[in-house]
Image (cartoon, rainbow, N blue to C red; front, side):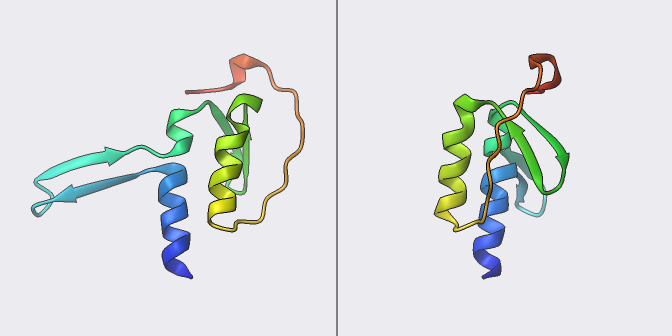
Length: 80
């Protein structure tokens, strides 16, 4: 279902939209814009334990297959 895939990506990463022939542009923030994260590659996301539930809830909503592993990363590595 490509429509669900698009909705999931937009909720995850956000999107830029425009109206009236690109006269007005605005950004809709996704979950990754609101939480601290590291994206070492396209298919992996490293997040804090506190934000884990938000991301898992979104993935379960769209039936995305996922695996979680505990990791140790210094706080200076995370970006907002």
